[in-house]
Amino acid sequence: MMKRPAGITIIAVLSLAAGFIYLLQGIQILGWVVFGPGQVFTNVSLTGWLTLLLGIIWLSVGGALLSLQPWAWLFAVIIVGISLIEAFFGTIGGGWQFGQTFVAIIVPLVILMYLNSDKVKSAFAMEG
Image (cartoon, rainbow, N blue to C red; front, side, top):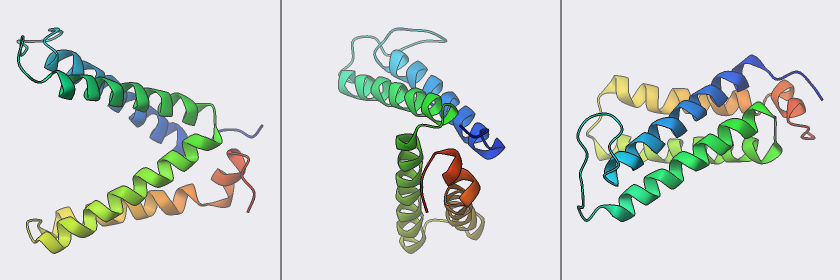
């Protein structure tokens, strides 16, 4: 097994942070107050449970990226693709300024190029 590239470690840590934040948001939406006032007994339980599920997924992806699981690489590529589609529609929607558009398109493209580099693909034990 190859040493984990530094960029993958950064992406994994960000995934773990996102998962933790989603978990806290889901708990707060469901009315289980962690920090500050919560929305107790409102009709947002589906949103709360979906947010909790999203947190669990992101925590799983972060752990899988740290352990270089091939499915985590695929998940990251799919998320980057969705981000690029979102950036495209945000751009043609006209509500974004140049800086927002630039970041929304360039950052996912850089991450996609990084994920498809030979070094990263070989770390995830992926051929060609």
